[in-house]
Every structure is written in C-alpha cells, then in structure tokens.
Image 1 (cartoon, rainbow, N blue to C red):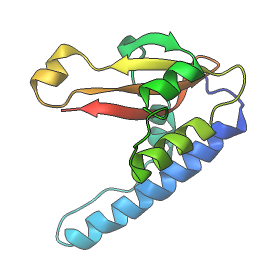
Image 2: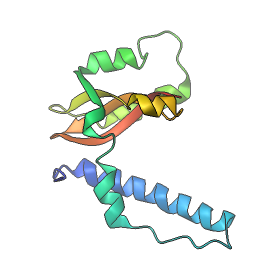
Image 3: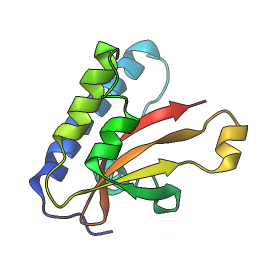
Image 4: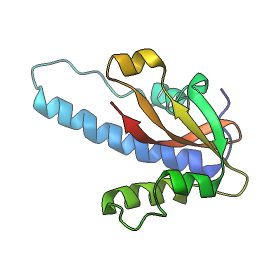
Length: 134
C-alpha cells in the first residue's frame, strides 16, 4: 500500500508513535520480569493505515450524515464524545471521504465487534472512530 504524501499521515503516525511508546513503557514497568520487545516503527507505519481493513468498509457518507450519525445534532451529548468526534472531524479536508465500517459477524459473536466511521484520503484510511463495540 502506498501512503499518500499528505502531511496529515505523518502527523497521525507521530501521534500514534507517542502513544505506543507510552504504552510500551507502562508494560515494561508493570511486568519488569518479562521480556518485552522493542517497538518496530516500520511495522507500525505499515499497519497503521491499513485498519480497518478494506473489506470492512460499507458505505460512503457525507459530512452532514456523519455529524448526524455521531449525534452532533442532539441537544444533549457527552463532553467526551463531543471532543472525540470534533478531533476526528478536525482531520477532514475538502476532497476526503467518510466511510462507515463494520467488522465481520464472527467478531461480534466473539464479543470483539467494531462499527464506526473512517476518514479516507486518496483511498487510504487516515483515522477512524469506533461508534459501536461489543
């Protein structure tokens, strides 16, 4: 998969790398007697923009439809959800696409199902937000 040259991809990668390093450090602190491997930046970069997989993508939606699905037109909405959705939509630029996604039936049967919205730039998933999980 070729990552678009859009600078947002590098920003998302850098942000995710910070989270991964912090998580890795917490793992090492929590399990000092376990051997925990190094963070593989190349692997992280390769796989970060391949989730959710293309076969999970369902339907292309408009920005207005996305805002409606997020419930941003409701009178009451939690501050945390509002912050998360605004951060997600803050990455959106003219020409980008928004797609819904849903994991396969077997993931729902194993209580690991996910459903949400993906921000797609030049055919590649930049960021996603999970709206339903079990």
